[in-house]
Amino acid sequence: MTDQQQPVVDDTKTKASGTPPTAPSVGTPLDAAVAARVRAERAARPKPRFGDTKADPHWPIDVTAAIVDRHEAPTQGGTRDALAALEKSYVALAETFNTVTPEQRSAWHGKAEPASTSAVRAASRQLQNIESALVLYDNAITEELKDKKTLAYAAEIRSVIRAERVPLSQLMNADYATVSAVLSAPPRLSGLTQAEHEQLREIAAKAFAPEQYQRREAAKVHYAKLSRALQIYTERVGDLLGLANPKALNETLARIG
Figure 1 (cartoon, rainbow, N blue to C red):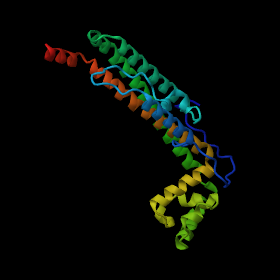
Figure 2 (figure 1 turned 180 degrees about the vertical axis):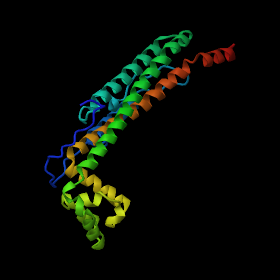
Figure 3 (figure 1 turned 90 degrees about the vertical axis):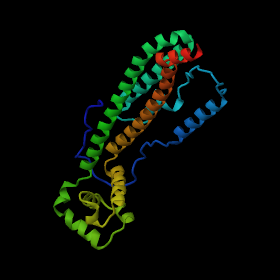
Figure 4 (figure 1 turned 45 degrees about the horizontal axis):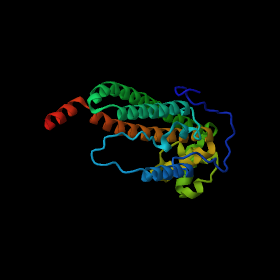
């Protein structure tokens, strides 16, 4: 399945409650361990001295291309490619920046600016692809949670739940037909708040639409990782471009002269 293809909804599978599968999340223990390693590496590096304009070619470990490999979804390949492209572009720009003299930085800027713009556009396109995929997955979950067999008397189910003030904790363990009836209408018709309604939908998605739920959660991880990588890239490359900006260099030389 490509990034542009819609997720497949399997209407033939049996709707059965039970222990929902564990879906990937942004705050996994492995991510925390990687982040701790990055902080330790940064702390061990010597602090830059005043006037030091050398670029740091180090790219954060927790936003490398391999980071998305344990979060499988159709957006995985495009996200991996986008992360790898950002890393390759940044390292190339940082290393070449460190090799040119101040007199050569104006020429470096002329090549680096369009190259960095191209990398940012490619990553932004992938973020848009992920956003589109998230909408598709969410719509697929909504379809999976519609029980067409009980649609005719869903209103009666909701009226009983509202009249008996069935708590959210009990609804979380309800069968597919009951949960579907609640989720197919505004929360007030079942005596729930908006927050309770959304919480029930997430629990139901894990139990009754596990495939689309896992894909959606994995895509969320992809989006978070790529967004952070793009932010890091634009900040670091922006600093380099600022140091090599021809106008800024000319103004500095004029002050010196």
